Length: 82
Image (cartoon, rainbow, N blue to C red; front, side):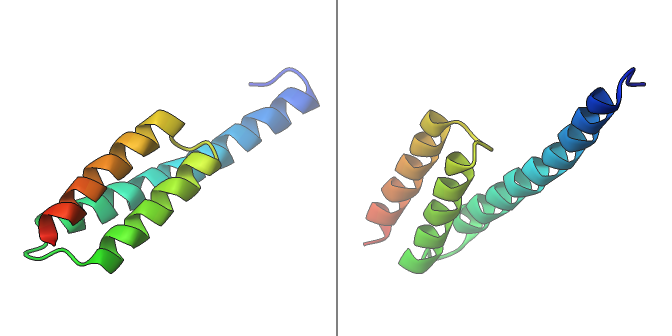
């Protein structure tokens, strides 16, 4: 239990942000899993996933280096489909 009003507000904000970050991470995992399990990968799918990864890194949901690593793996998959 928070002792001050401001601490209570920070606790509420943290809960909201954590829920949002969790949904974004789940969405990213779902996109990557769909691409990996697809019989044939399309460039549009991979570009959409890369865009979502960039947005997550920009807002701080995932680390910049983690985003670059994920994008590199997706680009490698894209190069393999050509």
